Amino acid sequence: IPAHRWVLEARSPVFKADLAHASTTGENIAELRVDGMDAEVCKELLQFIYTDSPPQQIEVAVVEGLLAAADRYELEKLKLVCEEALCKIIDTRSVAATLALAERHRCPALREACMQFLSSPGNLKAVMASDGFEQLKTGCPSALLELLVKNMLTHEQQISTSSQIDSYSNRTK
Image 1 (tube, rainbow, N blue to C red):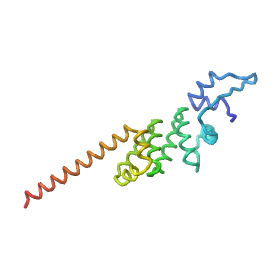
Image 2: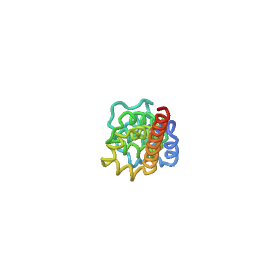
Image 3: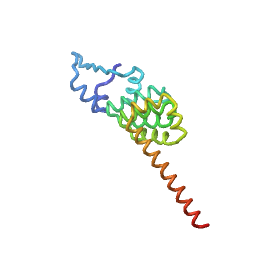
Image 4: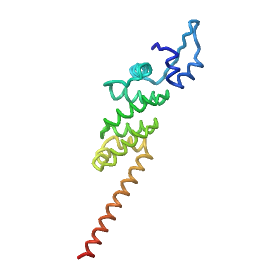
């Protein structure tokens, strides 16, 4: 996909470094090989680089790919836009993969949204009954451990509070 060298260099320090080492033809045209990126993601990435406008109404898989590309090419604004979009569509089917994506690409807001979603007992129970739980165990063991510890502490606090209420009730009778 053709793009202007100076635009890429101006927007991304990674593109700037890559282009500094790219070989050029006699017409001063550099060719960069971008592995591991879907053509649709690449098209949306370039659209953002040129316009600074977030993509509109694209598939979840493309948003996930854009998040990875934004992280790879150090495009923080695009990364935040993708995080925000993914935070809005977390559900029991997607939370495990989304949490793994957040962990892999250092997205604290997205990670927190996933953890918040999973902290609901009903949501956690639904995920535990699905294939997503296996994905959580293998892809995000530290997040799963954090979640389980948090749930245990919450449960212990509820028991402690209940015991304190019972003790107070018995004293006031």
